[in-house]
Image (tube, rainbow, N blue to C red; front, side, top):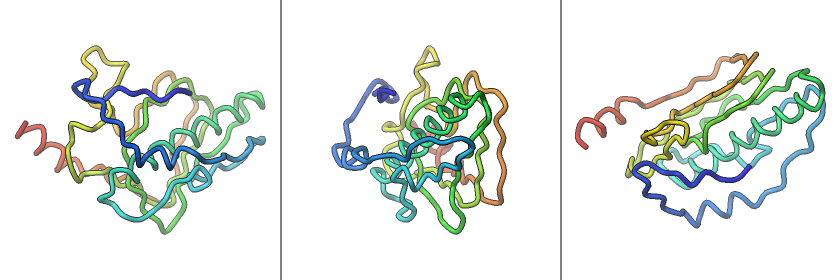
Length: 167
């Protein structure tokens, strides 16, 4: 899939450091496979690093695409996206996740939404008329998806709301 270069307020700002993360070979799909986001170049660690958060969003997105392709190619048998245990991944969404079927999201580790810096850099949602900010996880036209595991999604909404109130 092609990168959606649509950012909030139509102010797309290319992050050249992010390009380094996009040059990575990905695992070959196979039936019923578990797709670990680390196999797609996701890295746990620095929760303040915007470039890392973008790269992790891209890794998550590509992991879902691979899992969905595997499920589809095998007659909807399903596949799993894994966030590994004992790790926290900072995250900015890459884009809307649409047209997926029979995917299990197994959160054993944590996702922490990026909150350091200029929120105007947050990606917009091309499915909304006003290109409002993209949801942390936006699923459209999705069927038979499941969420499991003991990990957490730390949305950090408090920081976001202060940004909205003060902007």
